Image (tube, rainbow, N blue to C red; front, top):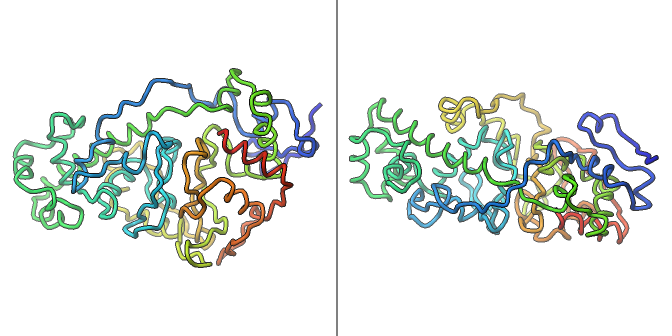
Length: 384
């Protein structure tokens, strides 16, 4: 009979660390899948139909220069992410582009979770001057195009005719405000509803992104055998859930707890954690205009926005999904590491880690894995 050492605080999320099997690097497949939080009931249905590359997600007309779309940074062929480091709240070169693989299941979006719905996240990106550099007025103008895919978002004809006479540069995120604020209250409300509608269409596309099939989802459904197909990855799964302690935060079909943690990753050029992460997001969430606009138009999708602010939130970022991990680098919230090997080395040694300024996360300790364990763990991560 297989033996486990189960910690009470992990049992609450259905996870256990292997005991005797870790050293032997062997375990029944069912036990490995259970330790990863994978069951036939929670793995989404696998779809093999290609994603239609059409609609507002792929349309550059939502950007002021008509050169950038959502897909410019979230590339379908790169696990819905990109190799660039994107802006964060108007500050360039600060945070890596996250994959959208698990975005449809998340209650809070962005690395710091400042958006309480996909709709709010989309609206902020559309109006961010260093991302899409568009605006709600440009989104309304876009909706009038017969091929926009969001013609049901159009406001009245009079408002559209007025916007059609204005160049896109005037409707950019830095310049649209003067036009918007001269509008009547009713017209501004109509614009906001149309803007939220366009954002909702993009959000619905993201929610429909197919779950990516891999060795482990297929194994959960009884279709493949990891121990035979990829023995190193199978042994690595045991390390992942056992001595590697990875399954503490990365578990379930999307390999994330969707929570926020400070894991000691410092700034790109300095040995410091100057990015407040979740702390800054929580301070601003209740008054975030995009959260308010999304909630007022699509209230079922909005998560709560008021939390008790805690110093422990400083430098904490959302646990990313590990699906298609081999395709979504650079890694960490700021793109600090370029390869999975570098990430494993960090957790194994904590070389270059920065002590959290306000609290200590007891989960983050050097792993001291053997060379074989490290190699197997890397093989598992690349198989996701």
